[in-house]
Length: 252
Image 1 (cartoon, one colour):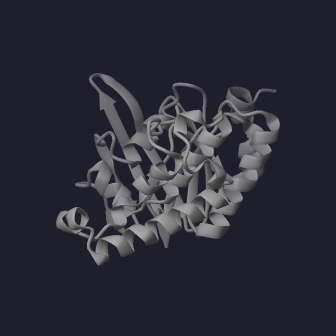
Image 2 (cartoon, rainbow, N blue to C red):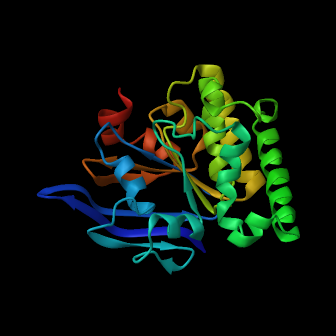
C-alpha cells in the first residue's frame, strides 16, 4: 500500500500555473527525491502536500484517505511532517522544548489536568519528556537540551528541526533542502542520518535537494520537475543517464 499518492495535482496563482499534472506515488519506507532547478515548483509541491496551499485541481491520497478537506494541522496529524528550506525553530525556546512541541498531537489530558497537574498530566508529561530525550540522543543533541535553539551551530539546528518533525510521529517525512549550507562531511553524515531515520522509524522520506551526490547516493526513486511539470521519474541510474535530465539539471 502506498503511503502517499498525488494525481494530476496542480495550482494556479492568478493567471500563472505554478504546478500542473503532478503525479507521484510513494511506498512505505521509500527514500524518494524530487529535483529540478530553482523555480521549478518543488517547494510548491511540498506546500500542496501539506495543505499550506489548497490545490486548484487533482487529488492527494494519504494512507488511503483523500486529504481534500484537510487543513495543515489535519495533514500533520494524519502523518505528514516536514522541514523547511530556511530553518524554522522556536529560537527563544530550549532544544528540549522545541522537540516537546512536536508531541502536541499525542496529548490527551485536558486543560484542567494541566492546570491542576493531575496524575494523568504528570504521567503524559514524563512520557513525552523521555521520548524527547530519546530523540535528542539519536541526533546527538542531548548535551544541548537546556540551551536555546538559536545558540546551536547550523548543522545541529538542522538536526533539531528533523527531530521535532519526527516527534509528530509521521509516516512520511518531507525534507526541503536538508543539505543546504552543509560542508561535505556534514552532507555525508546527513546521508547516513536519512537512511537511519527510514530504517529506525520505518517511515517514507521525500526530499528536495540540489546536492546531486546526496540525491543519487541516498534516494531509491527520483522525480524531476521542470516548470511545474514532471519531466521524468525513475531510479537514480535512469535519471543520471537521461539526456534531457543531464542537459537541464545535472550538467554535461
